[in-house]
Length: 366
Image 1 (spheres, one colour):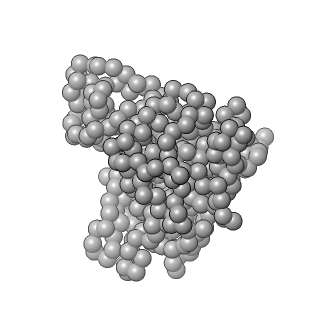
Image 2 (cartoon, one colour; image 1 turned 30 degrees about the vertical axis):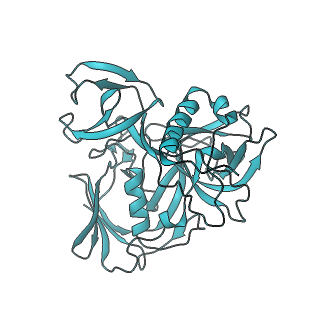
Image 3 (cartoon, helix red, strand yellow; image 1 turned 90 degrees about the vertical axis):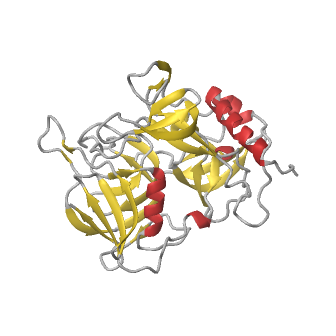
């Protein structure tokens, strides 16, 4: 059995694993990292609280000597390259977003940097059980492949913080563990991908348990002018976060509406993971706005039959301004809190949790 690893060694291991994954996916698949032993009976990993905060460049980003775009530029990082985040500062940049990250490379504005919790390489769970488990990508990114092999074609790139339903496990001839994850998007064939087990952290039940489940008077208010979502328990503010709401009418097509509309509504459906896409899969399907295809969107709270939801966001980190196709984009951490807090309450082994006006938390968008 592998020997336990102390915290200092574990933190070094996390950084080394992230760097190895970025250098070569095949090297990462076959590398022999020391990993903690598989949990004995309990589902919480003793190293679950050991992680480092990394930043992933969503697009090319610049690093500066000071938190200012007029300061000396030190270097750049390109899409999907990562770096350690060592702190946060507030300094002028745009009217809605003054957050900068401090890194070993310099200061970088937050808008196109996704902060991610990167964990140690995870133990391989050979028996996932009849239903499986919820898994969260615990590296900067990993590849979703058509078969459990590093030579298999890549179907999607799965990013850190995205969530998937793990339904099966497989160990290949080289001793590398793989998980089969379900994909409900209609054009997907087959309806699953395979991902390296070391890159997926089993989400413990404690991280999905309801928050304040017996408190009355819950409601959500969304101020579109302020781009602010607030969760109330009676008159008390329980939580608030900036959002990125719908952009409105799509330029060039007056009939295309990508706005988040003012309304009195309620939670209709909750899904821990959702593949959202407007990629056409029917010959006569009309696409409104830019095409997107986003697997593993985490912590979805749907409030309109059109599919509009509050959900986690991994394709930008720029909240406080309209930029979505109608949904309310929030950070992945904010989305997780909201998902756990709102009614209805469901079980861990629920792919979705339905509701109606009698049970679902009221939502007022104005």
